[in-house]
Picture 1 (cartoon, one colour):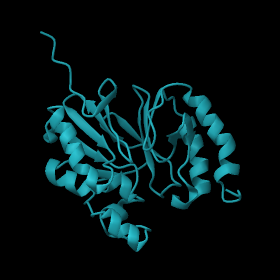
Picture 2: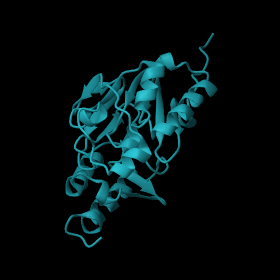
Picture 3: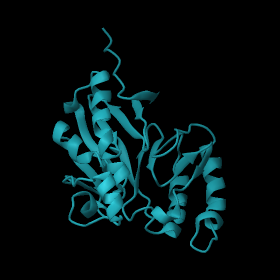
Length: 234
């Protein structure tokens, strides 16, 4: 008898890929019996993620990695809670590790720190350019943060882009420069994304994109320096 189809956690966007929307998208990727969670969202979203697993009847014990694209609280705020309930290792790039595990304070106003309640989460897997996590390849695209990464699935040509590029009203764009550690570096990192063969872009903000990705990236690469660059008037 053929095996039963795997259950997707969240709203299905492709076979084995689910989206748990919110201020930040969290994504789930199934790889055989393993499930990976890309970005945990704000701390208050963690329970919604647990509910999504329960609704899909996928046990949290199947989570083999909590993969963070970067250290900002809106992307990693729920990591401590989800680590406690799933025991899945937290993974992020070496340049952002100290901010996630609490050894360094992320650049953030006191008011935002109080509002967002980012709890430290021990990092078990320190990522570097070219590392593999399950079927995903780590692509270091610094600028939004020093350790911003995208996770690329070369076999299926999926790109989980975090905040290295986001979607807004049908176009690709960058988050506001005030949130970037180095906006000019973030602009340069777009070329790294353009070099990938991507058939589905899954951004941290906005909706997944499955058409005209190369053209949309070309458009952004052309206008980003004057729209977002440090020498722009934006």
